Length: 162
Image (cartoon, rainbow, N blue to C red; front, side, top):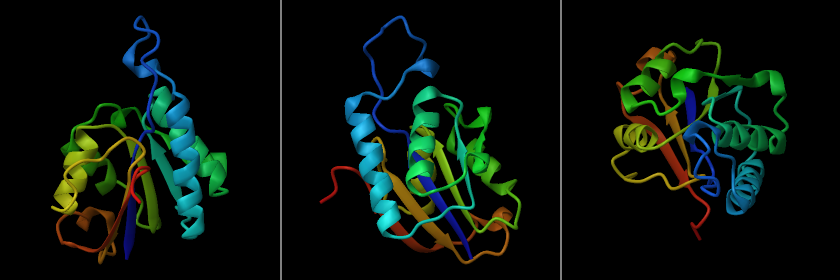
């Protein structure tokens, strides 16, 4: 069984129009939402083996806050430049390269690629709002097989979900 958590970064600031997209930080709502979503994961006793994150400031801040809330050591946060603005096919390629010793992986990235990948795994997910988390449990023994067979279980949560 392989469990994959797809996390869209929390809401970012557009306050400085001169700031490159890659360098935009989280805004107040983003900071609030990532703290709330981290707590929801903690209440469910979620504990990924590794957190893969885009190099973008907003994604890295999201990953670090969730990891802190879940008591995941910093050494288990892996920054991967391929995740920044990646299409679904590239995200899936990164997943297929994962070490099969890992059972639970969290991937923090961006739209539209993240929504496309989540929709690929579950047609019920048509949009990943900021700070949304889609959890997929695959009946697979290797990450290479993820996405080839249907997911066994899907949990979809986001900040404005009741």
